[in-house]
Image (cartoon, rainbow, N blue to C red; front, top):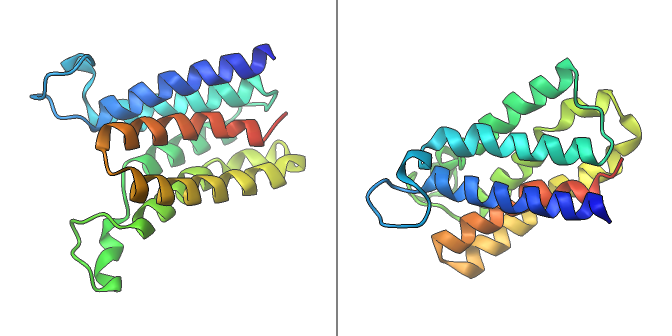
Length: 165
């Protein structure tokens, strides 16, 4: 039970960091301006994810985690908008498939950890699918950037509950 509470707390922290990393610096908001940097999302949210994995009993103190951390940061830094012209859409717009691919790629970024705990593959696959589908539906239905980003940020960390330890 304590594990779940700690992971939910990390999910809340990740939600704030994810939102902070996507905010402009001019809009008045309770998140301080110094925290509104894109690197906050890309490099502090993965810390929440990997701490949550560690709480679940997944070994994270190895080179695979460093690789997965870098891949996760990279996956968080793009919405795959460069694919839009392939679908006949404007490059700058975000569509449901951008969210689907983005969520899946964030989940897939933890793949290097499977070499340290291959028995958890089903949870990893479930997390990849859940993040992709959740992000696509969430962002199509909600339509409010504040709520969308808090939801995406929370989901990347709380979804480690699917992996288990």
